Length: 122
Image 1 (cartoon, rainbow, N blue to C red):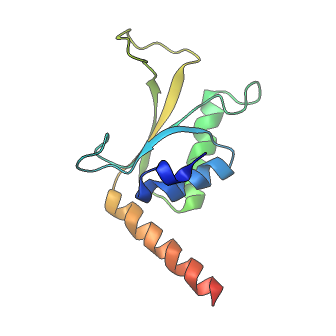
Image 2: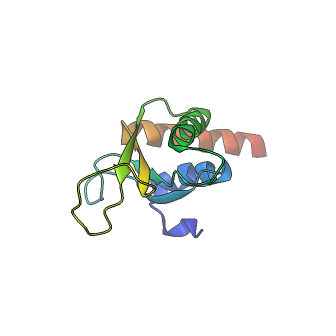
């Protein structure tokens, strides 16, 4: 994955989730001029086919977010419409939407992690 194409303030979270084996399909740091109001990551629930179901993926995603240091987030299911306007129904095309409650909390956490990383180098 080419992380340099991701929004700067969501990049580190996406890398972390991917390292934990959680496949992300899209992301946005949120705010004015962005696709979402708040920082958002969309997760593919089929990241380990045959081993985990949708609920296991949601749980694993929540655990990873907590390990990253995030506390305020919502995990919900969303449907990948791919341009059609069909009514929502549970299928293998469902995705998991992770929405952070605050962009400022994400930025504060990223700054704290950056300072810790610099301190370890010294």
